Length: 278
Image (spheres, rainbow, N blue to C red):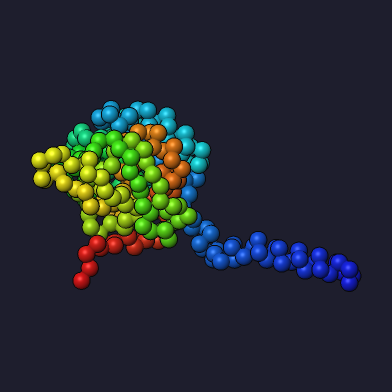
């Protein structure tokens, strides 16, 4: 290309513009670009059932099309017996469970735990993951928390992003939820917490009931952890499927699915983040 004195400024402006556009991509190594979490080509089983108050059946029509739109291969099961199918479980990259309360047999739990230990991800939201199989303590350890109650019922409350460097929450700001449950849970103090909620309203408390006073408490809402080679991602938001109308909620959930589905393919990520340090 021959440049003249008259078009040199245009030429240099073009070079400067291209450098500005390409700079963000230069900040990532080839390995980083290739290892970005994705659902494309991943094998997912979507297991639903249990208490209908959390709309597990409706969740299938809501969430499964979104997963398939991301390129995932999704199989849907309305039974926990799939956890005993060794072939299906060995081929699965991610289990999404929306099953509130109920019971899981020893054989079903053994199959679920084995798959997770071998690298299959496990994920879900609200009671579908965090309020299942209340009599199985080892299951609660896998998830990293267990529902206790939701003070105040359906209320407005805020979610604070406390880790803005994690890929699941990067670029997201604090946000508000309207007239939905604010979960109070028993929590593993070593999970990597990404978002919290604070109990700041006096109306949570029933007059004369001293043990119910939770105002001033903070509660993890979104977290990640490892179990064996498997990745666990959980969000306690989602009592109503309309909670996912909030852009930050559905963004975190889909990113969390993608992260959890990578356990068999990427190096194990450190997630132990103890709340109480010496």
